[in-house]
Length: 311
Image (cartoon, rainbow, N blue to C red; front, top):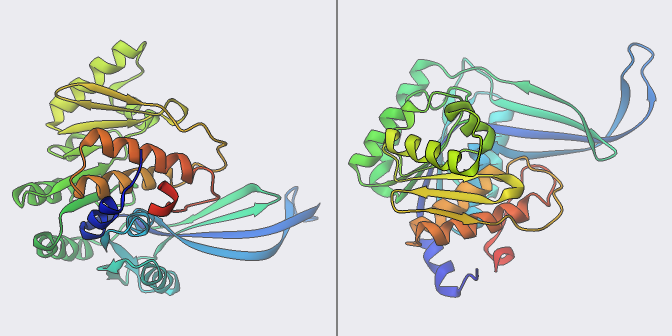
């Protein structure tokens, strides 16, 4: 898989809209040498703080890193974390269309890391208000004429409560729709161009398969039932499997050391969407997404892969 100059030029013409649960990932790095006298827990002396875009914002960041014209639509709070998300989006070259909701906090995941080990993760989150969601849906409809591909990044935090309506609107405007799903209720994703569950997510919906043949039967049945153009199953060390109405295609995982899998799914769907928006076939786009995922798991935390790295 090689990326030619013409491919990169085509990537830069792709207009991508990412919609979903926007988050701020915070990392507190430090060292620990003693146990607290207050409770049997380690005391961490924080030495460095890192902040990165998470959730749907990390998807947008990945798409932008590949050169696509990327816009993000989601909900943040009227708080310091929301302002930080806006700043990081600007630095990443992502156009922000975020909806501000003064009644909820920006979703934040705070990880405390000592000696390369995550000790704890603290989550701060609330579902967006209905007023914010309705305003976001109207903004979504107004943005559709100006983009080529829609990514719906569902982390189950409430920003995609109207996902069915979004898919219908995107289909009516003849846009490609890629969905990173969450939960066990997949009916809301009916009509998507591509659905990209991982193994555990697919298992919640179709049950535990007993063999590869059984998996193929269950995956194709789900694809047909939901009217999907394709179902792309990400399988970690087993690579990926693409289910379409014509065939079942496989691509092997990249052989490399896995350092951190957080955010790998964001990288995969971003690379897939950028390539499809550039006119690549599903099979070729899958190979690129697989390669991108293989690179990003060798990095700490939510990270990106550039077109240069892929080349």
